[in-house]
Length: 120
Length: 106
Figure: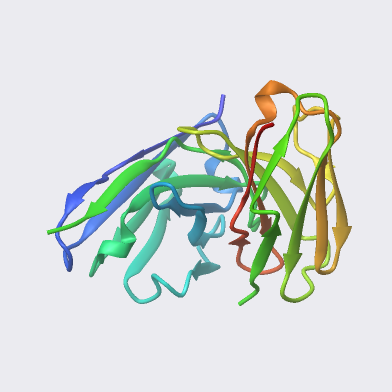
């Protein structure tokens, strides 16, 4: 059974940093692209960042470019999102999502999300 | 960036009726279009990819069509479990979602 479990969310002050993690199991992690998608409370879905199976292809939404960094450790079956210079508008549930292939940019499994709240 | 729009924003439908949801891209995305269903408090679920291919385990009452800039998700006979928000998403390059259509009970 595919499982994606996010962690690392919480309350953080504007301008500070936070690192999210996603622990994957139930599939061959290094065969698939992975992504972060966020959803502000009561709002729609926003793609944040994606990384190919071998980390050679990485993309970011304009809203987080230069502040967030995605990475993966295939040996640990883990995906990460380093979030710096956080803003109140970054407040959202952050979902880890599995691509349907090694370079795929659509998602067949999602985690349950971790809430990031940016507030003073 | 490719901008996705969806219409209507909300749709009231009686159980057993047909629902037709539209999605439009600001430029051609070929058939690189997916649909997701999201219920309150849950993560999204993939319904359709490549514009018209049902994901594993998705009932046949869900169907997708379109290419280029115009896409449609049809739910042929709405069941109680289908009342949810539906998002389209293009993946011609990096992905972008539409704003969603909420389908509720009439």
